[in-house]
Length: 95
Image (cartoon, rainbow, N blue to C red):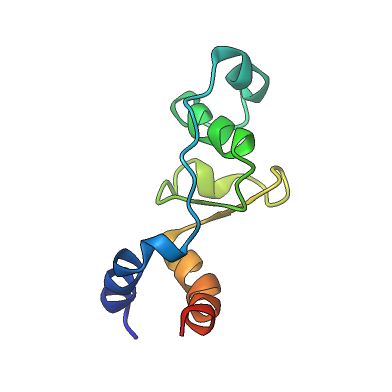
């Protein structure tokens, strides 16, 4: 399955992914993270922490993907890394 097919497959099966909507973090949630990455990305990281995310998927190669692994209680993956790591498991669970 190619990347385009995988993305279409994921879109068609979003309800099986168990996604949660996380509220926008407060300034108090963001402040302790200052300096860890670009200021514009801090709300995203804070939301992932508040929402107890397992994975943060981002295409932000300039900032977020350069954060040292293990710095947060979740994985930070590119979309391709996410599909490579989780698509096979997802396919087994759904089918």
